[in-house]
Amino acid sequence: MSDENEEDGDVATLARDPDDWRKWFCTDETVQIIAREPHKLGWLIGFDKLTPLHSEWIRYVWDSNEKRALQSYRGSYKTTAVVVTGSIRWMLFRPNDRILLTRKTFKASSEVMRAISQAMQLQQVRELFKYVHGKYPNPVIDREGSLKYNFKSTITPEGNMTAMGIDSGLTGLHFDKIIKDDVMTLKDRISKAERLRTIEMLYEIDTNIIDPGKGSGTIGTPWHRDDGWKVIRSFCPIARYPISKYAVCPYSGRVIISPEEIEKKKKTTTPYLYAANYELELQKDESLLFSDPTFGRGWDFGITGAEAQLDAAYDGTHYCALTIAAPILRGGVKFYQIIGFAYAGNVKNWIPEVVRLCNKYRVRQIHVEDNPDKGYTADKLAERGMRVKRYGEGMNKHLKISTYLFDVWPFLEWDPKTDEEYMAQVMDYKEGIEPDDAPDSAGSLFREAFPRIGVNIKAMYEW
Image (cartoon, rainbow, N blue to C red; front, side, top):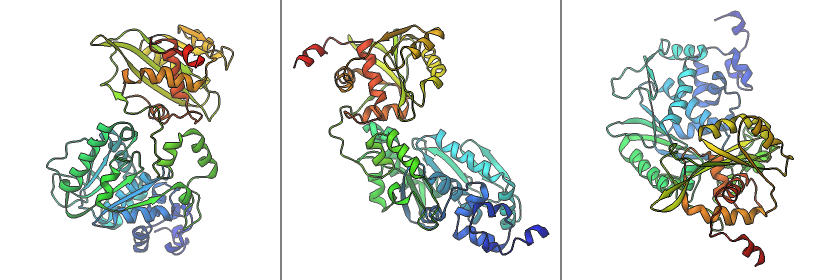
């Protein structure tokens, strides 16, 4: 130990600020602090936003052989704390346990486990593990979906950590600890089939995959009244941390998310999703226009005749929305394959991406409103070689959405790669409630490019 570190004083004083942990050193007391205040292990890794509240979450989910569930608002660092920091802490103290990390997809789960692998390579973490286990933590297996370290002394088919998606094959595997992180997503909000598939896998995980007497934890946010949280609630109580009560850590007074950030999220998130993902409350949505979208298997690039519409935005409270659709005949009936993208910020920054997507989906022409910017966006797209159809907007937005988009809704086959933000705006559309740029774009596209005989706007105006 260096003289410099000896002069830092008692390690117990390293409790006030993340910067203090840059001067940390390994002692029994350091290890004890990490055991009872695991957010400081997060500080050691570099997660300086973590607070004593995050220690409460880590201990609640991990330090039990019961089933535990925790909901907290998006952006509260629950994955950073509970999954990344919590997993490393658990391996430090329980080196032979087999941990399963499951998220909505295998890719999402693997990405988080990659962050854990990278954190384990930090020298300060390696020194900590060497102090506890007598050797540096070197990976025996470190590949996508699987981590095993040399400190694991038991022989099992499973390593220290395994990453899987909610739809991965789990038969024959067994674990000492299971962490389910964001296994319910927007897909569960909009698709009954997805909700049922998720619920089926939750039953499988919590009944057949976990070893008897071992614990599991579920963290995330709610999306739908009948999503997987309904099943979790039947297994165990759910600890809830809404943004209105926990934007500031109640133990330290440290700000987790600022009032300015909260206000921005309110302005750029649909009211339904803000209530669900930030206040953890599910509002009744019987008055919504659009429900149960049909998802196809993916874009058929063999279909020609694709048209696009760009709804341009110029400030941070609105989105640029791009809708692309192409007609398909199904048994003599015209359907449309459709995909949508939503971008936050000024359209000037997104024009190259719009051009790239239109080329990718073989768009023959793009429809752009001239009113807001005197033709600037249309001109910039044309300069990049796009065929642009300009039009002036004079129609009431709600009337446009509730006729042109509503009329064609049963005949739409959505590409699963549609942006979540785009789809959320469509599903949560209500008159006068923003953001509504995505349904506005879709309504404009079907009015301008694919008008259907059944829509009689003149009659509606006369009525």
